[in-house]
Amino acid sequence: MKKFATLAVLAAISATSYAQSSVTLFGVADVAFQVGRGTETNRTSQGSGGLSSSRLGFRGIEDLGGGLKAGFWLEAGFNLDDGTGVANTFNFNRRSTVSLMDDSWGEVRLGRDFTATYNNIYDAFGDNGVGALLKTTSLGANYGYAMQTRTSNAISYFTPKNLGGFFGQAQYYRGEAANGSNDGTGYGLRGGYENGPLNVGVSYGAVSSLGVYGDVTNANIGGSYDFGVAKLLLQAGQDESDARDQKARHYLVGATAPVGAGLVRASWTRISVQDSNVQANKFAVGYVHNLSKRTALYTTFAYLKNKNGSALALNGSSTRLGGNSKGLDIGLRHMF
Image 1 (tube, rainbow, N blue to C red):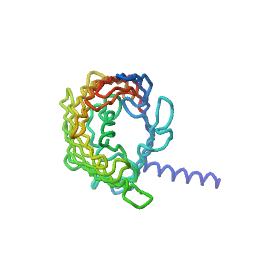
Image 2 (cartoon, rainbow, N blue to C red; image 1 turned 135 degrees about the vertical axis):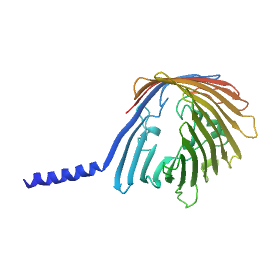
Image 3 (cartoon, rainbow, N blue to C red; image 1 turned 120 degrees about the horizontal axis):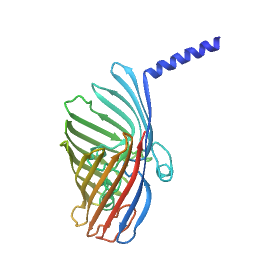
Image 4 (spheres, helix red, strand yellow; image 1 turned 60 degrees about the vertical axis):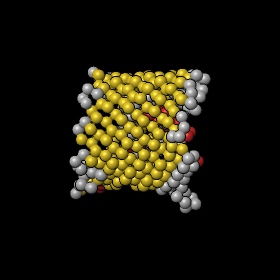
């Protein structure tokens, strides 16, 4: 009887604990048939994340009372086509954070997370698949510097959601170099306004001694406006590397339009290097058909036109300097 009484007490304590907390298991399984065509080589393959990055995650919130809450978020990326984790490891490389939050003063978040400049992306294709702007930024990586998607060892502050539509983010992170230097240490700032159909934002970030790129700065401005029948998206940005003494600029004009149970997406993007004629322009169009709230079929076609010293290619193909490339994604995504 004593044993049963002890178990009953533990069960009651556990029930009380769970009543104050919530933990969610979530994820995305996304695989695509991918075709790339270039002037030098072509490639046909199966890849992961043509619409959304495949991932598995856990998140939870605990009510601490008085409006204060604690939360955690652990998210790991994986490749659905071959079952491997990103970089052949299965770890929480996408996000691993713990937070304190309150509706009156906002949120303080610690750990590995998106950079402030990445949070300011306004792209009809997000950052996935052959149509996305970030899929052409290897030109920036070659001649200037492409934007950091995530950073580790960060502390971020997010403003509350009751500021009349205005929002902001401030972020600082340490490189934690063994020699005590500032290598890899940086910060980011983002601010904007979101109300009804309008959403606009501007961001700036800087990081010290990021490997061969030296000191790096990123800045972008963008926005979207939802007309109901279609949403217009605009963005412009610049990434600069002092070690290479180069600036890579990007521009985007995009649109999405709901059609029945689906969504049509289209965009024009340009990546160029300042003080040179090196340039790449990409035109992309796609369609997402929702079979349910969680499952969708999708396809995207992109055409990339290089200029002068640019030789970017799509979906693993290769092309000559100044040559062109085509890419096609056909895939299936399931969210849970």
